[in-house]
Structure formats: C-alpha cells, structure tokens
Figure 1 (cartoon, helix red, strand yellow):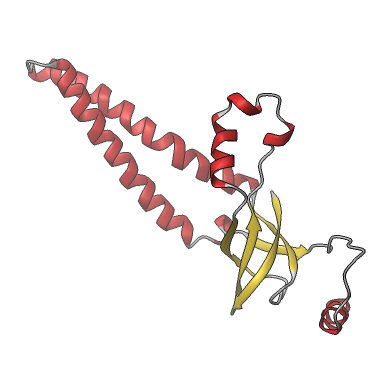
Figure 2 (figure 1 turned 90 degrees about the horizontal axis):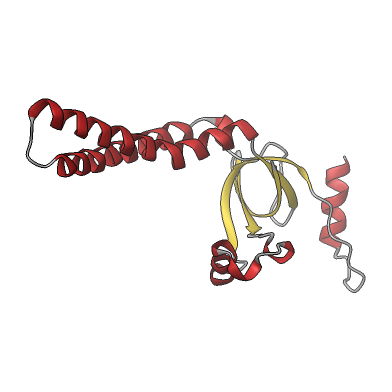
Length: 170
C-alpha cells in the first residue's frame, strides 16, 4: 500500500510528511446517497501530517512515496473494528449465562451490563495493542522512494531544485 507525500521536516531517522486526503466519491454512482461522500464533503481535502521512517534520506520539500505493509493494515483494522465488537458480544453472552447460573431478576439487564463491561475490556485491549504496535517497525509507514514531480509547464525551475535532483542521482 503506497501514497505520495511531501516531506515537511526531518528528525534523525524519521521524517514528517504531509499527504492530501483523497476519496473516490467523484467516480462513484451513489455520490448523493452515501454517508462517506457526505463526510468527505464536510471534512474536505485537508492535509494530514504523519511521522514516518526515513529509509531513503529524504530532505525537506522532497516529494516521496510512503508504504505500509498490507498485513499490518489488515491486522490493525481488525484490532480497531472487530475486537471491541467481539468483546461486547462475549460480554453479553457471559452476562446471559451468568444470569442463568445466579438467577437474577432481569436477564436483559445482566446481559446489557456485561456487554458494556465487555466493550470496555475490548477498548482497553485495543489501547494496549496500539501501544505495542506503535513500537513495531512493521506497523510504521516508511519512505520507500522518491516520487516524480508532476509536470507543470508554467513554472520556473529553481537552482535549489536542480542541486537537490543532482544530489539524488549521485
């Protein structure tokens, strides 16, 4: 999985890059009736800044390509979306079974309370998971190459741009 970004600053082996949010809503047939399209219009195309591992020695102003392992994205998506739901359902089932064992008056109440406790446990698990993968280099985006500058016919090339391009070729 790759994305193009511009380097805005560097800090040792890391770089801060800025990317533009993109949606495919313009090419979708259901543009007007989709919640994602409405959300994209509200949020707009603001730039996002993220910290990445600078494996290519990029400098401020460079247009770069960043990458993230597909497996890391799938695992993280599963952890964020599915695990709290699984904990919620397991908590609800445990509340129902606990109610049958203890013969409480309100089975629905026990199920709801244990479901919420399960959801909270799932959120706590997700927080610990996110702290663990924050230190794992496999889950960090990294710079994988320099991107080509878009062709523009009406701009002048600065001497600094020529020098930077020359340094890249060396």
